[in-house]
Length: 225
Length: 225
Image (cartoon, rainbow over all chains, first blue to last red; front, top):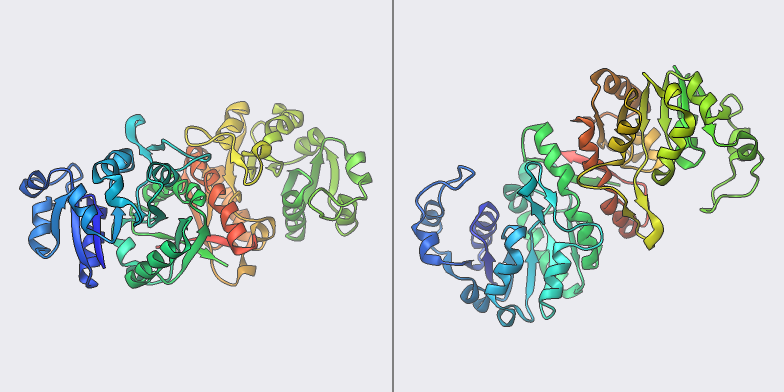
């Protein structure tokens, strides 16, 4: 499948790399491709620069947000939640219309320190905000409840764990579930309509505190039943 | 241990019954003991009346909130979150002073329909509100992330799952962890100070949606790591 991944951070790189490995045609979308490719310094978190990742993934194209979205059959929102609506606006409603949008972003607000709070919760969700802003796009919320490496390789935990999907379009969810299964997710729980993304986005407060307690982000929720 | 359980609903009955079975001296605290014992009709959820439960648990005492709290070494808040502060006020700050208070309540607001929203979240929690209202009491938040029958018998799931504790007093948490282990909890995760109750209380939105999707409340979170 032709897939555009919007975002060049840990999540974007992990998803793009895995999709390419699985045989998809992948393009990463970014505001300014030349600037992104020119980065040679580690990012604010100490992660290697995009250019280092790209050198190991030369078959992954890099394009503007609009060109990436226009060329793709399916689009992944791997941006920070605080800028997701802006970035998707730059990608363009026309370029996103009729397509499945996999929304991984979380509505984290770091303006009051760590742990961040959520800038939308309980009576709305970022997934629903995106759906309202792009009504012709089929938004499916998933993968926002675990770290980037486990998103694309959950079996590395050595034990089955759960992943959630929320969305209003059954066919779009079926497409996304297939992708998740190709990543190794063997317990995909369809929570129902996109409204249920309120539940998965509100997992972040405990996720962040568990990361602190366990001293690692390498863990995942399993729904034992 | 002498334990008071405040609340006569599903949670109160499950906790009181299990503690009694484990050899503790248990008293259930309620606003009006005579009225509680006189109930012969099923509750609003179709559960058997308190009198039916009491007939099978005659060794569990029933007393006013204040008398129950006064007689106990450890107190369990098994009331609805919306009335917890009122009920604990009736139990009396003096009767709660210096004691461990196990807070199981969730800040659910049903005034906007189902699923309920949370009346406090993200920047505060019900556990912290109770701690501020009763500063001489050692509040430990736990057991608010699974249904009543699994609270007291997690092994009935047939597979290990996780339970969380949050609190500011290490000794109080150690007491509560021992009680949890006596119930069968074999993966107790100490999240740290009571502030982390924000994380566990914010699990309710996905818990409620999972109950809808799975068609049962008989499930629990396991942190796979």
